Amino acid sequence: MSRLLVRNIRTLVSCDGDDRVYEDVDLVCENGLIRAIAPGVGGDGAGFDQVIDGTGMLCYPGLVNAHHHLYQVFSRNLPQVQNMELFDWLTTLYEVWKNLNEDTVRLSSLVGIGELMKNGCTTVFDHHYVFPQGGGDLLAAQWQAAEALGVRMHFSRGSMDLSKKDGGLPPDSVVQTVDQIMADSERLIDKYQDDSFTSMHRIALAPCSPFSVSADLLRESARLARSRHVRLHTHLCETKDEERYTLERYGMRPVAYMESLGWLGDDVWFAHGIHFNREEIDLLAQTGTGVCHCPISNMKLASGIARVPEMLRAGVPVGLGVDGSASNDGSNLLEEMRVCYLLHRLNSSAAAPDGYDVLKMATMGSARLLGRGEEIGSLEVGKCADFFMVDSRRLELVGACYDSKSVLATVGLKGAVDWTVVNGRVTVEHGRLTGVDEEKVVHDAEQELGRYLAGM
Image (cartoon, rainbow, N blue to C red; front, side, top):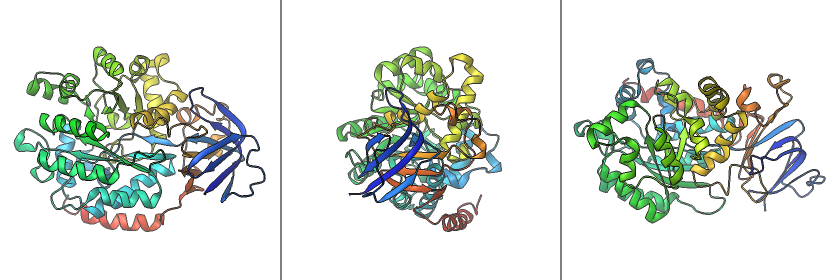
């Protein structure tokens, strides 16, 4: 039995259904689960494998990143694409991404997940949909990185079957046939889908987008996912170009097109969802279909502002994600929270979500999108011991902690969190990753980056 005690936490923000905030409490974790939250419950610390002094600490549920493309860490801040919008941006970068291999994916995942964890993230969903011919077993490489870092990982078997010659955007070398994709999806579900309560890895089926996959691929992915009880994910309503594409090609708006293929329901979540109309928002709410909001990416690519206040009021499940590092250009969900808060204050004034609403989007909201609201996303007895802590006594937070529920979105955090714990295991200690040598990761990543971008 592994036992962890955090003693004398200044403030613990639970994000539970009652929005409870605890003051001056101990947090007891056993075998990856929370066993107690109460003053003095840890006693003198005897019998625990590790005791952390929580004096002055603000403690929060681990953040859940519900949409990312980790491989894009190695193509961020490239001057060639800085002023492009989505379609041109994708077309240009596919010429880089077609050179992915196992080393590129492993090292970019180490960098991207490491940054997320240093900023309070404990669960990462990655939408990987680029599988170059001869690239190797890319999800196995990603799992090596996730296991070393100790993160709770949700993989995806993304896919594309429409290349340029078929009216899509990617080159031929990164698309596959529906039969190839389905066979590999079965293999990866067998390998990575763990339905246990404290599962450290699960997988979703995630065709890339309506403009890079066929109706057959979407239909077959939905059939397989439901037969194997895994979730479905794709990009949707990210740009007006996409809307024009589906209207011209299928005679339907994107949501209607996806509905016709069985892609609505409480086992489905879409990334972005910027250009929904009122009727579509109501349909998403009625069907329990979720949306992952990615404000920084949407701003950088000039895609638009998602109607998040309306979605929340309608009851659409909404979570938060950083999106790909090449359209962000980082992996920091805390930064995403503050940008989300400020963007919607600017755009919607009093109707915007407040700072605590945004925190709950990044915790319980995202956990619900991944189908894990009973296990993660809040700090409650019996749930997984995933949390992070920030020392309230740091210079940047002087005078900012009177509202501990909102401070991370309204004021924000400059610098890494002090502690991140995943499944009861310390993964970030005093702002440093515990599972890897950060300097070695940087060195190896820079070496691989030079090779990868040599032909750019």
